[in-house]
Image (cartoon, rainbow, N blue to C red):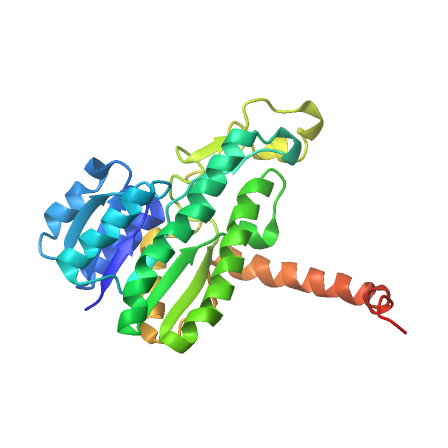
Length: 275
């Protein structure tokens, strides 16, 4: 049995991760900004679940959540940084305050929780940190430049962290889900207030009023949750785990296209060294 701390459990993948871990007999610190949305999980699993309010942009709440996990269960063995939301805008349309909040939630939020659990993990010489990224970090679709950027930042931090903590018995991994049937493309999706007409055929096609994907995504959150738990428990978690058949299809194509372009321009790349 291990203790999991999962951020952003009110809906979607975060809730699925928490439910699957509880079903597996693990202790879970279930968190959300509005704790009333997760109290049902704690009520159904009174011996193994602890519902804690957590806004990952709030330093004090992050410290309190980790302290609560330590007081109740003795520490955090697995941290799942899942809290976040979508934001769509052409790069030119991006609103500074909205982008700053996106960075604060996704990147700095993950940094806060990671830094909060690492001392305990280092002391025990064990632990796993799971950072939920997105297929967007690889595909960078039009209209999702800012969201893709924060997820790419999370992945870069994860891969560096993995190298830093491996000698300490700790694992860090990033997870790239494809499209899953959650409310990510519905209630949780935000967008720029003022679209620019020149981007109607690119970023504009992915605005909420034009996007018909919500509710038809191929991914099953429950299956993703059980897959993640199996990978964490395997003891050989990869640096990057891709979830969803769409992600498994699209990411290799993106990498192949990148390799092809690198080869095309390799002579220019190599021409810049001193003779």
